Length: 253
Image 1: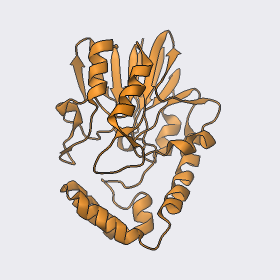
Image 2: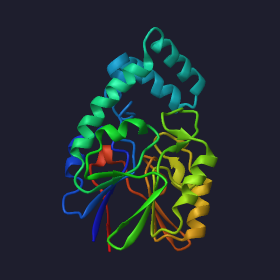
Image 3: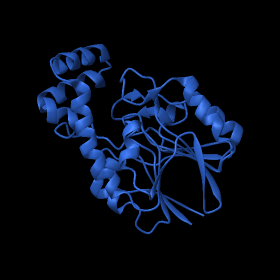
């Protein structure tokens, strides 16, 4: 069996259409939407609505950890607009293109910038959406838990620690544990370009230690200090920032 794994697609529909080539299945660990490209501030929903200059400024504020100022800038820009309607219209356009690019079969879970309630409208029969659920692929049991934890970024699909832990507990024993965010290990959570720690999950780390899956696969941190690390019997792997690489991570057995 050969499975390809991607995360942090962020609008890369062209690469996604090729991501399953040569594989028996594709796994997607979330973040399909491109709201703002931190490498190219001209790309994404935010600069399309408010221009590159404002995108430059909000990236600068967030990178410096000045989240309150970034939120205030956002409030001023959105004043007088129907924020929810504008974002949903833009997200729907991206989802239509991205879900059409998924090969069959695809197993997918949500990232922190995704909008889960829209996925059923776009997922075709060959795409199975899983969150707090498990599936058998080629004799191995894969467990999926989507979303991110609450953070100063206030992205669309952030949930509280208790809800996240409950989804993990519902999985039971799995061979491969798939999530969008990493376990709460500093080397796996630190982004060397953004120069900040992203939120990892302590419950995910505890689950890895207790369940001892063969692999724990995740994304979320685009330029991690460590891309992989062994925790006990488990190989923990950041499968990469697909938006920039266009290359899936490969699992064979």
